[in-house]
Image (cartoon, rainbow, N blue to C red; front, side):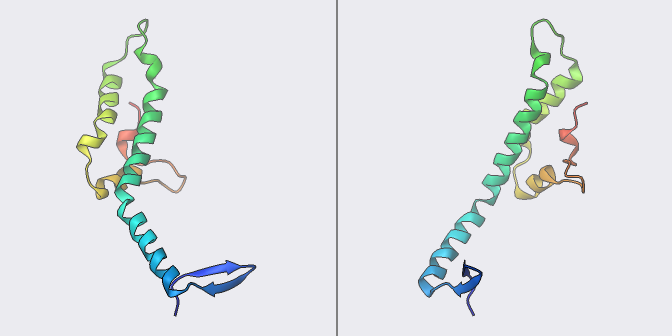
Length: 107
């Protein structure tokens, strides 16, 4: 039984052995880069959180210490969270789609 199928006009046509072998390579490559994809997503979220508070870094504004500490903890994420389990926790969301890890909550 085939693992992969082409869907052509609603008809499933099994991959050939050669196509399945090529697809297996693509799937393995994709899966092997799971950690990289998660870290990229974390960095994108982190950047957005930093951008949201960048105005506090203006010379005419005094940034509160708790915000300074929080921003530093965001910048330290790659150094302090280095495995896929940590990435899964950082990317966890509730039923409403909101990130649940406390590091994302601005003080």
